[in-house]
Amino acid sequence: MTVFGPNEWALLTTQKGKSWLVRVEDAPYSSHLGTVNMLEAVGKEEGDFLETNKGAKLFLLRPTMEDYIFKMKRQTQIIYPKDLGAIIIYGDIQPGLTILESGVGSGSLSLALIRAVGERGRVISLEKRLEFASLANENIAKFHATPPPNHHVIVADIQNICLGIQVDRVVLDLPEPWGAVGTVAPFLKMGGLLVSLSPNVGQVQLTHRELRCNSFINIKTFELLRREWMIDDLRARPVDRMIAHTGFITVAKKVNRPLAASPEAKA
Image 1 (spheres, one colour):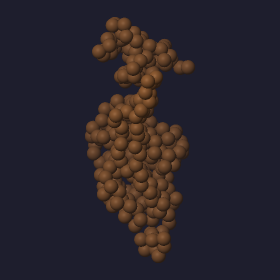
Image 2: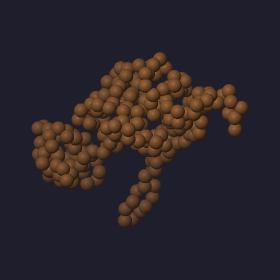
Image 3: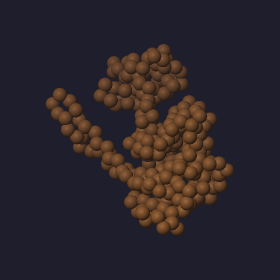
Image 4: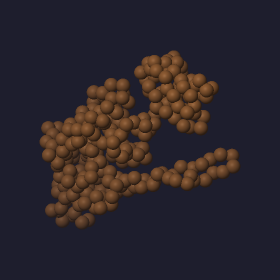
């Protein structure tokens, strides 16, 4: 097992599960449980602990992507892990693909896409607001310790962009995704998938219409609800609150003819 080194992220975690994302550096970190010197984490393995000046033990864990996403700086609503996982699987995001995404936000979707395509793949992120693009770049660079060479952020409106390449997948997280469908369709390879995340069903209806008019078939929309359970020696029941509706995921496949003008369009 590798040990913690300087400048890594560590997840300081109590036995009850409360946690803090902290950089391993020559600096103290204080909480209601006391203070630790983070430099003492250097050389320790994951699962070891630091003891605070109050005698509390804080376990050293390596943060998962889920941990980082929930604790990173953000100015917009993040895409929840339950939706990120669905986007990766239903969008068939795999190593080596080139992905075009629009609506970067704070960078949570970009992080998932970059991991999924691997070093041989590429993620091109379009974001029209400079402050969002800058924050996403900062969050992604912090997670990877350096900006990933296979990730490119372009500050532009997707409805006015002209790309000189073909992409394998398009992923949209936009307030008006239907306005982008006609623009991105020419960039998407034949047989490629478009995935769109929208919180409101009205957005989904308009997106479906544009997909049907722009050579897409197999259009499907769904949502995912996540409910955790409370398990101990005396009880096993759902928790009182759950992560219910966060967004509708729409997936569609591009084919080689505009279906709106086809007699088979209603079949």
